[in-house]
Length: 531
Image 1 (cartoon, rainbow, N blue to C red):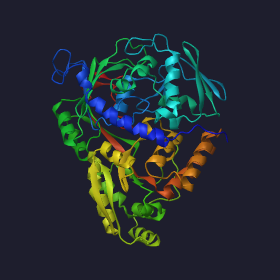
Image 2 (cartoon, rainbow, N blue to C red):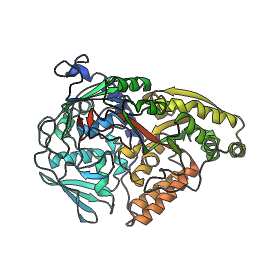
Image 3 (cartoon, helix red, strand yellow):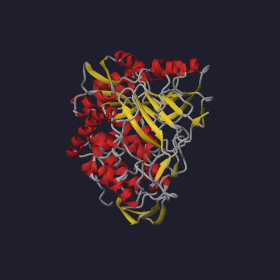
Image 4 (cartoon, helix red, strand yellow):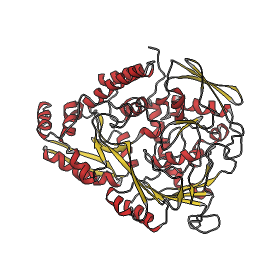
């Protein structure tokens, strides 16, 4: 097997990455001071809610900046779908790959060579032309380990990217990778000149080639976009302006929807779905989106997989789903939900079995297990928290709840200061194939820097299986290998899903045209206008 480019974030680059995230949060908080509409005059005219403006209620705060190389926050990532383009993008509703800046899907020259041609007249929001040089730069900064790009783990097959001419880019692969045409959607194309001049400034005030351009962002308040009139791609803006209200409080989000202040909201509280149906259209879409349980395997207690397994067996997952989510989730029987085309039922399926949980703890030599479980303050996660605590208590496990904003929790985790985490996750925004979904949590950054799995034999085996699957020529072999990975991570339970949930969205179908709810976190207003 050929040697692969490291896809994890090494320690030296990890420290740089966490510093960038902290800086990005501070930068985005002060972007409003740099110009753009004031917070009291949301339209250029000074009026609010004109026919040309789409307003939306988002549930997640700005936890990172907007640089698409490092953005992992749900809200900035959703914003970037409107601001940036890749050569290839994923349809936000179907998750199917489609040409964006490229005139067509990349052409296969041979097993390890592809070419893509840029569409004529494509420009960035500063008016400069999008060139092959910008494309090469965008990929090279992802591949550079010093940049600690979160996207690097998804493109380990790339050997090099070069400009054939001003409009044509050639990709050289280390090995044949059949998912290449769709996988490069993880790379958004950025303007080389602007990024090289001021990378931190670009992270706070992004410049892309998409249908909407960035105007301003105020943390815990709003993000404002304006139509980019010079956009000449297939999905032009259908509204003159967008204002995304950052409303983390679920009841406030519902009130904004009911009052007509916004035309759509994500993450509708499950108990409010039926009540909103009279004033808005609501729909819950099955997603990969999961609630996962992650243990710090560097902690001696959780280094034993039997202890980690006991935490899963002790959970009354069906009760949690029925009570807190009103039935809008499915207990995990594999890494991906049963509706996913690459679903594999894991050899280890965690059912509610208190006796087995106690037996595993006893076998591991654990008497009284006490710890603090960190949880994010997302509305539905807070609803789930006491039920998780109750389940563990029934098995003699004492867990103290530590609930805080996502950024604060991950700051603790990235500093090694945690025991157990329960949190939502959804890497399907980057792509929906099993290779990508598995790599997010089990290859590179997460296992090496977050849950301390890097030195384990199981992790080495997972990496080998994923690399072997990536180079497999036929689909059946890939699926078989992905199934082996699923069996392994289920048994190890260092990080593993508790359930996959449905995503409830509400929108004014009389006020918006062309809107559809997404199977991923966030909202999309591509091809959506005011009715």
